[in-house]
Length: 112
View 1 (tube, rainbow, N blue to C red):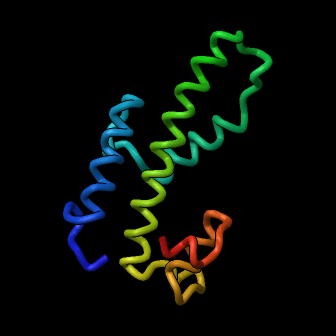
View 2 (view 1 turned 30 degrees about the vertical axis):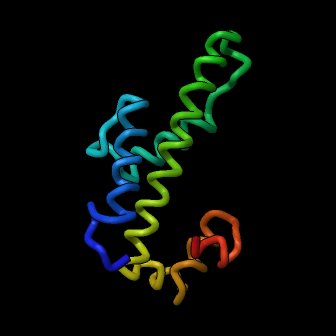
């Protein structure tokens, strides 16, 4: 984690994230806490019964891409939060333990 963003693993993750955003027609400039919360609310506030089968199929494709982009974003922001020591603000001395709690995994999984 000591490498500057844009090099090494962080650079690769950033490249993957930007490609995932391009795939869903977004740029990294628009990602914020507000936009993530808005997306989450949209995902929980719709009724699939009101959509046609074809619309559900298309939405499933878009949501699959969004999930992949979201996972890449989660990895990037989590790595940055840990590198900054922000996990300590939530009472975690170990960044891997905080990450494991975030995703419902074990500390060993959080270290990977």
